[in-house]
Every structure is written in C-alpha cells, then in structure tokens.
Image: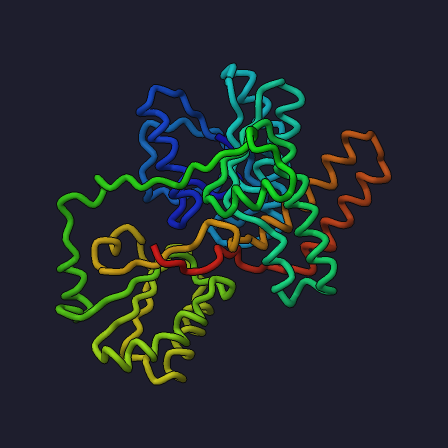
Length: 349
C-alpha cells in the first residue's frame, strides 16, 4: 500500500487508507504500507506493518500542504516501494493519489508487479481556480497533463465515485481498466456511542445541528457553506453549524470566525479542532469532503508534476530533461509556496 502522506493522521485520506488496510486484512490479504516518516502517534495502527522513508530535515509537525520536505519524501518512496515489494514478494502495488501513482510507476517497471491506482481526484477543474498559479493557462495545462497521463501509468484504476469513473472514460481510459469502489465506512465504530456529552459541552441540547468534518482549507468551499447558512438561520434560529477539523491551520479558523461575524451568525457557528470521529454521532446532517471529480489537491499537483517530469526524463535517459524537470519542480513549488493541501468541498452525505 503506497501512501504518499503522513500516516496515520487525523484527516480524510490517511484515515480512509487506515480503514481500507484493516478491511483488506480481515479478508485475508497481507498488507504492508510504504509511507512518510511522519505520523500521529495518538492514532492506533495495531497490526499494520509500516515501512517509512528516511526523515528529511528537522520538521516533524504534520501539516497539510506542499513543501520541499514532502517532495523529498515522494522521491524516497520510489526506492522504498521497490525494496518492500522485493522483500515481501508482493503481488500488487496499491498506490493512492497522483503522487502515489507516479512514485509507484518505476516500481511497476522494475519489479514487474501490477500497479493499482486508487483515484480520488482530478486536476483540470480545480487548478485554474487557484489564483496563485499564473498564468491560468499553465494551470489548465498542468491539470490536463496529470489527468490524462497519470491513470495510464497503472494497470488498473479504482475510481472513488461514479462521476470520476465517467470522467476517466471520457479521457479514453478503457472501461475494463477502471471500476468504481466507493470509500467505505466501518459503522461498528459508532455502535454504543452517544453525542449527548458533546451536545451538553457546547449547549446544543435540542438544537438542529449540521456538522462539517474535514480540513479548513480555503479551497474547501467553507466560505460558500457559511455564506449560505444565514438562510438556514432565518428559517430556524436555533440551527447550529459546527466545523470540526483534525489538521487545522489556525489562520483558517480565524478567517471563518470573522466571516460568521460579518454575516451576523457567530452565535450559530462553532469551530473546533479535534479528533473528527468523536463528532460523527452528533448530527442529523454531516458534511464531508467530496472525493469525486470536484476534488483536487494543490499539493498533489505540485508533487505529482515534479515527479512526472523526472520519471519521463529517467525513462528516456535525458540528463537535460532531468535537470529541466528539477528546475520546473522548483518553479512550481515557489509559485505555490507553503500552501495547505485542500480537499474540495463539503458535499452532503
């Protein structure tokens, strides 16, 4: 299982991968994980075998977003996955996200093992919306390039939604090379739990409650969610919107508090940074990050674009292109800066 992110961590992708590994194990599969050296040690991973790349730099805090450090981790995933596949004699390389597919492709070529690409996002719709990628034609070109080529590096594709599956078919991916497997939820984790203590803590007894769970990135669409909530309050004055994030940038939290105050609904909006799972039992309606066609990760674009250039260069043996790829990667990272990694926006579940 090729996991190009901190693992485990208290946000969507690593959480979903953790549950997937356990589910596959229960079905009799032996799963070993290749991932970053960063982790949230408060999250149990009992029974999972984890191989981590070497640590780079002194920074150990889990953050969401591109950086030099993450780009280095992605590069180190390539030899690590090859080593792990050979030692384990693995049957399959199961790679997540654009970076995972790109890092797993050399492993496929060298080990001869099939590469499964677990796709949860596209780039073409999202990259042009980020104003810090300029000119926009470059963002569109990057998005189209990644969307077209990355799925073709894999032997088979798992699309998280029907919409993403149909998007890939339109790009010419053969129907027999892709299928839809939605992310699952282990409902047993909610059994016997009650949200009353948390309702009491926030004085929410008897109040209609809507919860959003996910990261607080500005690209999540939370501005639209908060902007529309006064309409709900006008019809139901006691309604409360609770935003619960795991890996949260405090600047984002402050932005949404100010936005709620501007709209006159600060008493109806609660913003919390806490373990997400504790809040799922509270609401009549929960909002989560959409993992379909409308999802895109700016960090995925950054790191995937850099790896793609270098992989192509290595395949054709061009030193000049290798150098150009590295320089292009530097340019992309400088353009993006230390931005947070988004999961596009609160979709009703």
